[in-house]
Amino acid sequence: MEIRRGGSADVPRILEMLDEAVEWLVAHGRSGQWGTDPWSATQKRQDQIAGLVDGGTTWIAEVGGRAAGAMVVSPERQPYVPAVDEPELYINLLVSSRRYAGNGVGSGLLAHARREAERLGVGLLRVDCYAGSEGRLVDYYRRNGFTATSPFTVGDWPGQLLVQRI
Image (tube, rainbow, N blue to C red; front, side, top):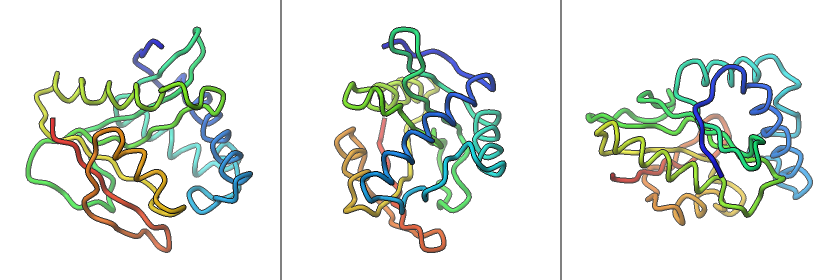
């Protein structure tokens, strides 16, 4: 797996990966995270991903020359997350293609985020995720070295904030 810097040209592939994830989640009875509609089907979601990519640093994990995962990091947190009084690197997006599930793409990108935080001299890495579905995604981040801190809700969407000290 190679990790390269991404940009606006990667937005269609990122949307494709998000669409794959939605399809998989729906097929497994877990539509609470992102609903049932493909991300690429709505302009609002297309604009959301383009805005994240434009406003942060995008990293693309490639396997065999094909984008297998994407991550966007930024010193800016999501607006629904409490601020901190120290510099941080915030993971605003992490998605991997279902075609590469189980190959460590997401974990590889998270390791890259840790290295990037170290390079920047930032001591705090944060991410938030969907806390429904028996906390499966929360457990995934725990297995990758994060500690759950503050649960939150956005509307009726249950979320969990997680941190990792660098």
